[in-house]
Image 1: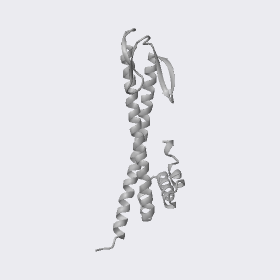
Image 2: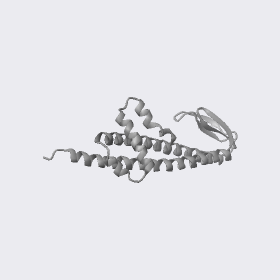
Image 3: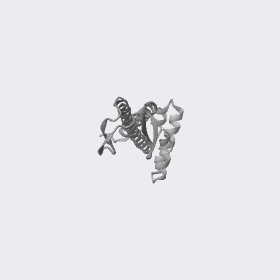
Image 4: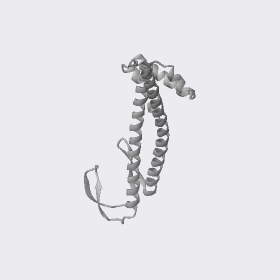
Length: 180
């Protein structure tokens, strides 16, 4: 969640209009107050509402991307955990294919099923016992699931702000449209 805490400021610095940065400030003020958000938005101008809706939609899309990345990482860790379980059941000296990349496998022989190399990121590997490797996977899976739940809650709130802003914007535009 910290990744997105300064998002509005960065967008404003990258050439967005002052209305955009005003919308971010207003959105944050409304979020901190909680109640009366709809009333605050009804007092905004059409331009401010458009900027707020655009910002909320953009942030929601970023949250969606993050949620997808967390789901992908969780699935990979679950596959790794399952592979460790399968590996622990194989006898020493067993012939197998060893993955070097996602699509390149080479023949190999299982030497010691009690020691595994765990990829801890950025090209670093740590040798662990089979039990430690499984525990590592489970800890990471639980952490990712917890982060997913928290991020989902934030994304849901952001979506409701975007939807509410859109509804108020549509109502204002309808009021401003000339009667035909």
